[in-house]
Length: 321
Image (cartoon, rainbow, N blue to C red; front, side, top):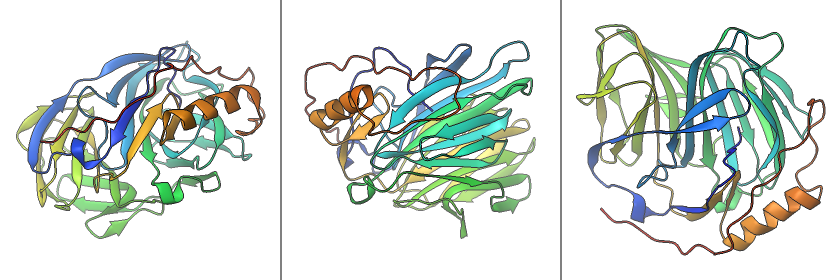
């Protein structure tokens, strides 16, 4: 998915200066961003004061939206580099096309995982005809320096492993949870899981103390370590936890996101993750004037132009807590 912000500002992310080394309960509020013609998304990462969670660098939550009489998601071809995109649906369908030739319809609780590596472009749209409701999340994972120039590729995993407990069904989207591993390719130690809870369920989820974590609320009301987390909000949990208490006040769903703190400082702007202002600037120019990012075939419309890049280079700033 694209960041369609026409006033996109570069930001420095990563580095241990941003990591909270102990358990905390930091509730993050989203900002609303228009995506395409008719979809509003709630952006949780990057957030004021909180840029990443492990290698997770971008989190949008959208819906549930009634798109019966609307075009739904319509995101024209746009570029990515230095990251992976994770498409995750609870309702609806998204048709993915990319410049490697991939064409795939992604359905609820199926993993669409695109590794941009050195350069890729893709589009996303609601099929025609499409289901009435659209509800899901779009997330990015930053690639470490050793792997950020890999060949671009797309994976689709329709059957993902489950971890179950009374009142809990956890779908392992990426990484490993309680000894159960997703088939999706990862380049840093991390976890992404979709947790479905029945009303009244109480459980303790096992965690890795070296990871930092956050929980994104998708639906219903869940108390996470005693904090009520409502749909469209995210609770940052810091590091140092071996388990996480969850209690569902209704049938509910949340996403658990976590991973080892991302050591490297990155520069993120628009749909690019790089290591310097100059690298981002080159990528923007390449998208606008070269064939580096390839061609998305079959999309009925033009490519998404890049916004203007602010001329001032960023200087990294750490934050220690």
